[in-house]
Image (cartoon, rainbow, N blue to C red; front, side, top):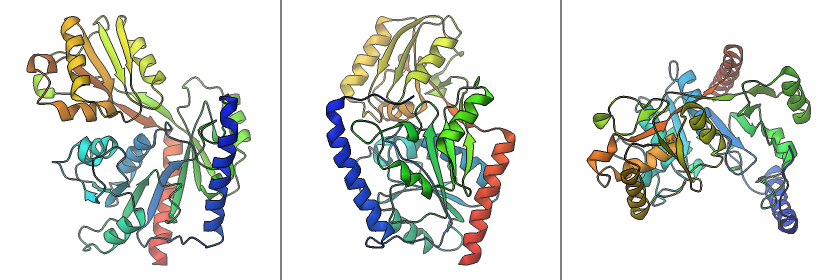
Length: 357
């Protein structure tokens, strides 16, 4: 469905689009340089400003590739304090490296998570690492517009309910660059596909995207797992469906999360919404704990990404409240056939890049 923005924002959107066109033209004409890294690099990005689920798709690729390759994740670490390059350790937090890198490092402690807004510099440093730690493949998070690097394999994400073909430039719409930028994608994944989507719905989206001969298209959806305690050492029994719930989300598109909470719990007392990557303050935590104290039989359920930020307040939250804070993990699902297709395509790109160098 085409997005309807404030018509007053149309002019700045046109100006934004012109600026984006000039920048991309500079790369196409080699006025601005782009380098293809020696290390096979898989980029997961989008044309729009957030909300397509890049991190869960990065995690899917980690699961697919780590049995065979030494994988690193390269990310800018949005929302972190400081700008210096960091190779994440188990001592880092969402504050030092960003909530999404922290989530990845916490779930995959053996994976190198390199945090640096300058992707080309980071790739050069990783390429110079000793053979025993040098990555076999780098997953570059949100690098589709970082054109100073030419990835080995480009994966473009676009949401089912608002594909880039139906969107407009910022600030009238969500697009960071023209729809024509999709030609750089090797594969396109339509995200957040409803599980009850009929074949005709798949066909309509496919026809609308009008992919090129070299592009493969996939449809992914979100699978919600069982709620997990944020502080496992203090957790009691899992909540039941009639447990009163306060739901909280600071993500780009929280509707799906709130819907899942409502489907699984009969009494949702409140739904608290914050901006994406919202940096919770001490006052926010105080208000949250006051709310839990007031609703003494309730629990808090938040998103996995929000949970990573709340962990930074472990020493602030009262011990008697910690067992009442839970989060809802998610995974990206592709059909087994499409999972194998994507893996084969990625492995071919890795192999070809390795042979080239």
